[in-house]
Amino acid sequence: MKPDLFEAPDYYCLDDLLTDEHKLIRDSARDWVKKSISPIIEEYAQKAEFPNHIIKELADIGAFGPYIPEKYGGPGLDNISYGLLMQEIERGDSGIRSTASVQSSLVMYPIWKYGSEEQKTKFLPRLATGELMGCFGLTEPDHGSNPGGMTTNFKDKGDHLLLNGAKLWISNAPFADIAIVWAKNEEGRIHGLIVEREMEGFTTPETHNKWSLRASSTGELIFTDVKVPKENLLPNKSGLGAPLGCLDSARFGIAWGAIGAAMDCYDTALRYSKERVQFGRPIGGFQLQQKKLAEMITEITKAQLLAWRLGTLKNEGKATSAQISMAKRNNVEMAIKIAREARQILGGMGITGDYSIMRHMMNLESVITYEGTHDIHLLITGLDITGLNAFK
Image 1: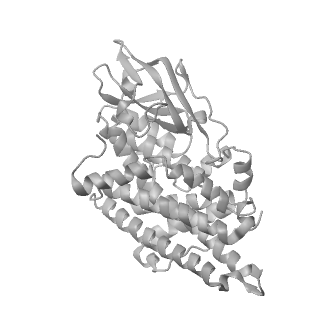
Image 2: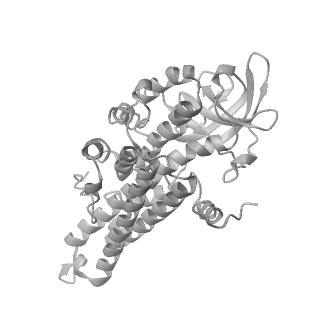
């Protein structure tokens, strides 16, 4: 494996907008990626396996619930810190970032925001250390972009809830200790339930044959007459807005994470363009290659500014769901385009595991789809600016 020589682009001096704490958190995560992810990630991606041994290390750098208060075992960081962590982890690999995003925004966040005090104290500290790992069950085999149509349901049986249904494309499912599952009650109202691994009738078959997120563990959640204690129902929010609130937090992290993938592709292509000689000189000296590289750094810079401003708004409690949606869509599209252009600069070498670009490109094909497809996010922006709902 080649040494990780990554140098982060900062064309508009955005470091000047960060606090010393932000930079310390980011640089610690960057160093960890260089030491613990870069040397192993190609091997794990090739064999389609998640490197379970890094879970504790992710916890140690604060990647699990960065914004969770210290009272519940989290570091109590701000949203820009969370974004920077996701950026650096996804610079290593989107699948590793997905593991951290799910644990933070889709498992810890709903327990923190919608859970009882007992649920918070029982689960959050152990999730923060990685002692417990979680997953999030919203998407179903027949309901992806329309989660409100879900058929997974539970019935009140007096001393417990009886859960039936299935969820699909669930990151972390095969090894998760708990699942935050969204299901309809007998009145059709959506609620969140904490389903624990040992509950009878709960299974998590693994999804195989993926060309994308190969170093991430993906599976299904199957519920066959699962008896869920009533104290595992999240009590403080119901309706579709509850899981969508979790997705806002996750999409925010993705908007930052995609920048990391784009930066890695750009840095790889820039370095290669200076080293690869054709027609008697480095290919970086040719106009078409400079056009590609100049457009890459421009788009990365725009995405960095978008993410930083969104993080500032989120810290102030002003970020809207539509603003988060725009950043997720824009930044992931930016990253996937840069990956494709970077691959062309590397020519045939760009498809090999000697470089990270093809892996990033394949990963981003999932990232542009999950947590709201590119087209769905366009319609969210369309609804926000026109007031007219194109979903119905």
